[in-house]
Amino acid sequence: MTTRAGVQRPLLWSLLAVLAALPLCVSAVPHKVLDLRTMSEPAGKYEVSLCSRPSPNGSIPGHAFVLYSAKVPGQSRRVFALGFTTGAGPVSSALSYMGWMPSVPGYLSEELYTSIKERCLVALVNKKTFDDSWAVAHPFFNVPALSAITFSGEYRLGVNDCMTFMINVSKALKGVVVPNRGATEPPQAFLRRLIDSN
Image (cartoon, rainbow, N blue to C red; front, side):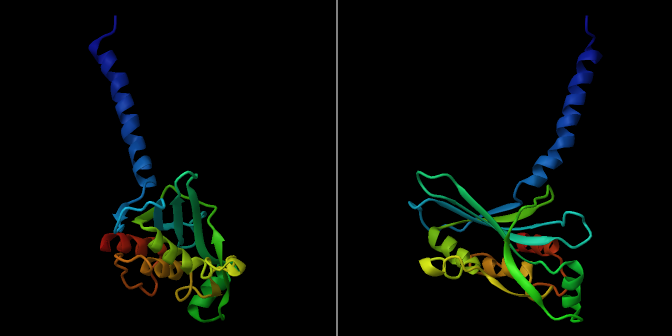
């Protein structure tokens, strides 16, 4: 025979386990979703997410990137996550910020790392707006011979870096309020202000 206390204790532990896991689930979802669509879209469903995450080892301030998602009728959803980065390493990047070293080469890279602390401002958009934001990453996407050319340039921390790329894409999304970037503001702090501004 089970006592009332014996029945409540497993229920209590189950409830505590669910409550303990809840912050993990909540923090993995987008923080805010904006519906910027101006009409129904027969060409599919399109999203542009402005995101940031901490660095894998926590020793550098994190990273900003953009996630493009398209679901065309009759096809599987396609997702591309892109960020502007450099292969020069953290020391050279930091020195470029302080002006002690000239800019280093920068390039768009597919995002391969994710974090439970990742945050995003997700914009639901029409195809035209999606194409405008995609053109920031791929300026010649609609010219077959040049479609492989991507956003590139000299990387300089605080001037032309991952946040610059994300801000440029943000400005292509009509209806998104983009705050001014702080001189030493890390990606996650800027994204928090971007979310709060919308």
